[in-house]
Amino acid sequence: MPAGWPRVILYASLASLVVLGLVSGIVLFLVYLERRVLGRLQARIGPNRVGPWGLLQTTADALKLLTKEDIVPAEADRILFVLAPLVVFFGAAMAFAVVPAGPRLVLVDLGVGVLFVVGMGSLAMLGYLMAGWASHSKYSLLGGMRAVAQLVSYELPLTLALLGVVILSGSLAATRIVEVQRHGWFILLQPLGFFIYFTAGLAEINRSPFDLPEGESELVGGYHTEYSGMRWALFFLAEYAGVFSLSALAATLYLGGWLGPWLPGPVWLLLKTFALVFAIIWLRGTWLRPRLDQLLSFSWKFLLPLSLVNLAFTAAEVYFLRWLGVA
Picture: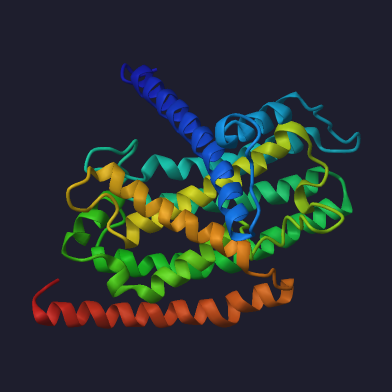
């Protein structure tokens, strides 16, 4: 083994532990925040019994899931069954590694950070299909296929929307994209791109009104029908990690990231991120779930053509800015 490899392995291990600890803490808070906000939106109280103001309710839920019996179906493919929730959670958590909270406050400053995020997000597709196939259940298999169909449909407009930001900034690095926005946030130049990215992102992380793969109001839960205990909780953790990473990336790519007056950079990033998190929770409390055919048609017949229009509009913007001598 080369001399520098132990240091690289140590750094990667520490970074992974930091990411896992950060994700776990954020998820616990987001679950509590969502319950409180939904309670306000729906004129009810929300969690208020366990701990002061109900703050320990999500901790109690986590302990309950940790102590529940872990059941693996007798006919299941055990290896794939065990790996599936880990793959889904890993893809959602790794997006945190490239989100910069300041010029030097980033775990891994990749030159292809945007591409890395898109690639990690696509891992969920593999995990959902693994979960449905490995469960050896027709309900789970159909749920997994439905989830993959949705992810494939919305991955295309999401990626095309991000291309607008890449073209304007001339870089795939998240830190460089934020620095370019010192002259103006990209949401002013890319309002259509922001709408496409945010909408497609909600479908990618299976949030309302795009939460058909879970089917929580149906008789079965979809791809995770046969899961219980902590393995089921990993799917749950991945969803809420996706909520925060989607909001943080949208704030980074379209809202100037850490840029802002007076307050420290990380504070600005958190304020912008939680504003978008609130919008996601608000949507869950107000919008109805569409049919599956409506869900897929919305992507292929509306968002995808709209993302191509946005690309053409971005090219015209770049040409105009260069003509003015700004870009």
